[in-house]
Image (cartoon, rainbow, N blue to C red; front, side, top):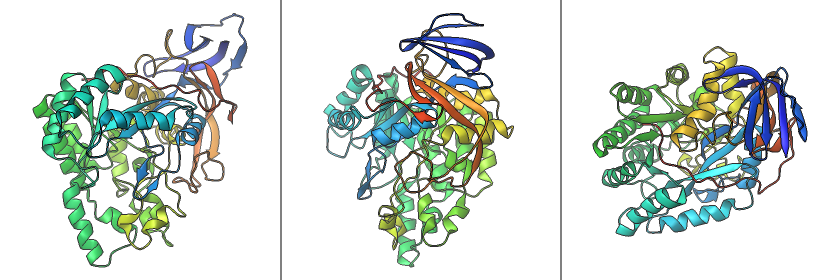
Length: 462
């Protein structure tokens, strides 16, 4: 099928021009001025931006956590992502301690098979490298399975935490083969001790989730992650960076030429600690890790995005319903499932807070929502740009349309929205995923199973 997109303002990380785009099958085949070519479908993008499909490099669909499972599976989560202008997600498969890494990957393939509306890839969460066969499995994932990034935790002792020797071992192995270690960087051992003390003193409300996870604990984890990566001669990627204390460590490393990369998330750019003070247990909606920080951190994170000390914005989308799921921790904040929704609202939030408010350029908006993720995680130039030969992952984005974010109109399978009542300018209108219409004039026209698993190449940024 041929689709002709006409009269749009085409924006990539480096381009800004008016032109037409011809899509033939799954790929972009021609870009030009005033193209007069027969097509099965013609889309008029006048007065709209034509941008690469968003890439959310950090989601958790159908993930077991804290005695329950995240509310979005690959069907509902990818449908919601598409509504927001995201055409690729990178989710996390999880190896539990003592089990096979390859078996874990197979489990997540089965979770996603036939459900995704958009394309998807996997990182692998590694919790055990104690056996020689685990190391061989890491090599196999990089060399044969197209899973080239691995997440490791300095938090959650007894469940996900790994020691420094294991992190160093993974970094040395992955780095030598072009893989990338993604770090959840917090000093979880010390945090657990602070949590123990708080609970012993009867401090059980949701706000104590934040008050027991100080910014210094995150900064220490980031600093240690970067030091281990430097010793292992490996790049490192810091996930969900939330505060200025941690950002300073990344900036210092990058200024010294160390290949350290980091993401932040919309919740740290738009929400703050005060949300935990809401009455009637409402603060539980915002229990995520790392927690929301004091508001002044937001300006520092925006500066980090502008100056490329932070490379991209992902969501850490991990929704748990307020009723039934978040309420598991009503009498003990440490039992509140950690995570919040966001995959549907990322593009509009970042356009509104970034471009519309003059913090970043429209090119940088594309870079931090799509192109950087494609480059860092081995998908560029197949994804993350508009160019001849690239996948036709294209979003027609209305920069003037306004929308009020609400659980009443979102498509995520969760009973609240973290950004409830927030008005944004900049709304996704139409979405193509590998040439197929998924969203047309704001309506879902795709189907579950249209999305494909993406085998990724090795790290492209150093």
